Length: 326
View: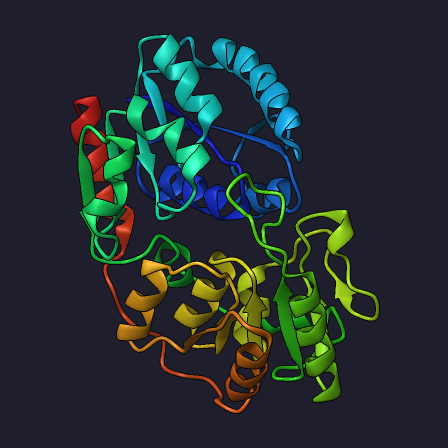
């Protein structure tokens, strides 16, 4: 079985690399121009093809996606199909060429990408913590689940390296990692700029260095260490006093490593509740007052034992082989 994996984020790059290196899947990995994406694939030392770029506005998303699909036709000719997180470009191309596709997903709230991929795919692989009712509006043909989260694939394999943190002039417990919200994603409808600014101010007042990992140029924070080129985010998270994010991935990674994590993503997320039940040090908040309280609490917690759960690698490989026929 030979398939394309279109990695659109650093998280997806990690999944693609582990599936290729350890899962025995013959994957051609593609990506697009996006912060830290190439860096992550190069950290794993896997070959990849970078085509197109991330569209920020609605029109740009459409135009850039169409350009990428045209390029994917050539790449996908000799392949059997697609294994990917919900990549509208890859799944649409596979569907048009009459090839199979399997979608990995843990974000039922990502309405636009899900609507353009799940109905066209042959199967959906998702954490069992997400009820199947959450996927129903996307009309999946088949839902296959595992008892865990995707991030466990790499946090469970990670050996912390203090040197990568000290290269930035940092010491363990002296800093807090910020990861701003995915403000330009199609599904993101909230404005958390003021909340983010207040939390940065609070962390500085408490004597911590702010290490910011922006998604876009306008998310650079004055007076912080802004990481434009990626270092290993797992090392940063492991040695941090806490990780604060408006998204989901880095809070999940930190909590799985035993580092207190705060997510101010405003939606109700099944994965967060699953991690809380598993004993991961993950805290959630949405309002200004609540987030101030939660951040102070996180910074008083200290490290926690990392939770144990099912490694999704075997489940993903088995599901992919079933759909593609071995």
